Length: 308
Image (tube, rainbow, N blue to C red; front, side):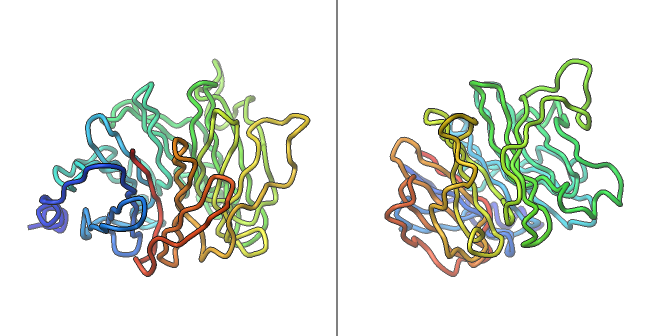
């Protein structure tokens, strides 16, 4: 029996009702879930995933989707899907079709999965069954390019109403080279993923930006940063659009994280959820007030998602 079959069978009895958070233990290859207050912690998939990093939820079909980074030098990344209880694990994007997939988002209107591919140096999407695989942004092509961390795409957010996609390029470790960029959700006619005229640079010289989320109604962009303090190991936000009220310096909402990674906004209830590689899950109001730790010592935590 394979590791995947074993973990599916172990978690098959797990059932959920009401709001939940789901998050990933990158080191142990696990998927976990808890109530929004951190109680009722459950292991959905007990292992067998190869460095899972990004997670998204389809509440209509009750499916979890996640990225497996694999070995960053092997080009063996993939995207998998399961039921909420961890059963019926299905390969959506096969091993090697994406290099090192990171944060993952579902755009429900079009029924598309969007993700960043770090060592692949690209922003990608496909249909929720894995068909229609596309590269939207390509920041490099060669092995030489791959060594340049300023080309690495990590976090992603999608604004379907304005038909735009946002992503982070993290830069070197603690190097202050991180950037957040934006482009149209589709490649302009006659252009290519590596030569697009609609790419906008929103923020530069960030410590090491990782995951993204957006509040489209209030036009605010949120992200985690795992770089060095004072601007790193934080959750940040800034306006999505340059205007008279645009802040050149992002607002720090939460600090003192142990390498912040995952981020999920609960816009209905005005709160956020955050994970770090130190193994903690945090929550706070959207303005950063009322921060508190929900869980600690849960492994090396990566992506997180909230479902009502």
